[in-house]
Image (tube, rainbow, N blue to C red):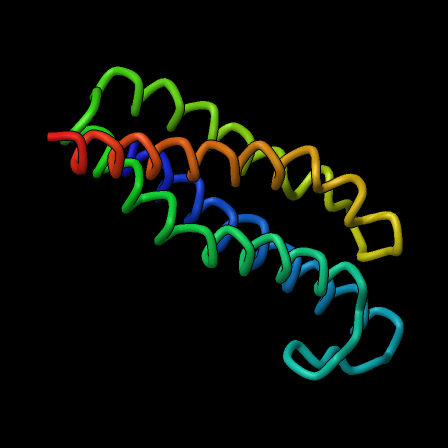
Length: 133
């Protein structure tokens, strides 16, 4: 699961984010405009950056609770929940959309809500098992 999560992370980082950056560089150059990667406000770059940053922000809670659950509760259950979690994270950029908008929070809750529940379940079960001996 850890390898699968990092595969997703690098696909987003090197595939989606990097690919979007170079597409926008070419698009802006064709129009005779300068593309500012870090201070520009292109909504497509902002959406991709949000997808990458959110996946990165959730990495530590997910991996820690996944491993605690696998070690102390059930490696099989941790694997199943881990697969569901990674699939949800993979869907996140699609639900976020090509550019940020006001409807974005409503769409991405379909991913973030279940993802938070999975992390809470993994961690809660590991904590319960550790405390109950």
